[in-house]
Length: 194
Ligand SMILES: C[S@@+](CC[C@H](N)C(=O)[O-])C[C@H]1O[C@@H](n2cnc3c(N)ncnc32)[C@H](O)[C@@H]1O
Image (cartoon, rainbow, N blue to C red; front, side, top):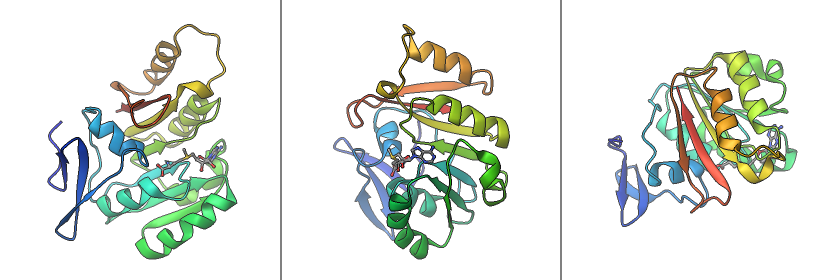
């Protein structure tokens, strides 16, 4: 992929330009950085992209996306009040993050805050993570999706979790890309789709 001008790879690291200075974007703390380093081919994020982010935690990845997509909003859905409390300083600083203390199983609860997202990004290590993602895609019909899939979290006897996941994702999206990010996030693969 041709990287946007604010990203570059140097000595095996991903760097992002902030106020004319290059900073490392740690792939061990952000699976999106790992996706790029692992050779991910797609980057749909534009200045005015509207994002629905499921499983925001304390906001490591969100803090980058809020700067990349600075003229629109990121709706951050998180089930843990402890993680949400840790996100609040970033919410205060960045101004374009809408915090939502909700369970991502129920998209109708944050429908108003999410307001027609163009991109859904999910990083939730739950057994039914694919169901959660598809339920949100069905509800919001985004143009692009990222699913950070933790295979160890799926209690399935099926031989090929990837085949099954891809088949399900392909019902909603024309293109589905899978990138192995195990090197930085144990047991994870990054799915991009549009
Ligand atoms: C691996 S962390 C996310 C890390 C974050 N995406 C980042 O890159 O900075 C997963 C988060 O998903 C949250 N989570 C788990 N189940 C959830 C659900 N049903 N709805 C919303 N959030 C959930 C957890 O509380 C946790 O904070």
